[in-house]
Image (cartoon, rainbow, N blue to C red; front, side, top):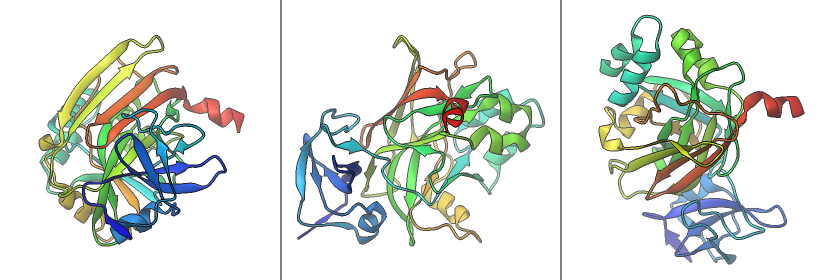
Length: 295
């Protein structure tokens, strides 16, 4: 028995014995399958049956399952790429932060988009509930809530929520510092689910909240992918131009939500990003160097 995935939400979960499985999100429960290979499921376009077991969902927004089950990053991406300056709001913010020549306005108006490698082999990416990090040598770190696209061998396979955590003060000092501002320990989060949309041209709302250590809201705003200047198809076409991007890679499509200058991520803060059709990605904030010192 197989089941079409169009319109479905899928998660990856770990059972109490360490086994990893793909599960279909249903009304209040997860239908868990034996396979743990999200890419294979998406490429096939169906879930191989039968259902192994059903697991209650403890939180309908974060999709956290009942114990001892654990929600994982939705796909182990071989590469994670990101697009920049795809929203007018992002262009304005990066022009504001930049201390040098205004390259961001030029990128926004140009035919060629800004694309950069965010992560490889998942070394810097965390899943739902895991800590994202503020770089230890940065003074201004912000979340960048984005629609993330899973890219298959022949095109897009599904979408999830992405957080392109960024050190704005480092990038603002010089655009050539972009890799240091964007690529470091736990600077990316993905989850909680993969949505297989009927159309990749359908627009979604993206909401973001930043809560401080006392649970007070420091920032709350929303936008729509309708405000993106570039389409998903256009971004993927440029990403794969003369570039052997492996199937299962993730493309972050840019942000239209930028916290004000006085808001920076601190240890103890929490970032919540919500796309109603997908779920709520919630991550606490830690200091990047803290984990490195423990290793």
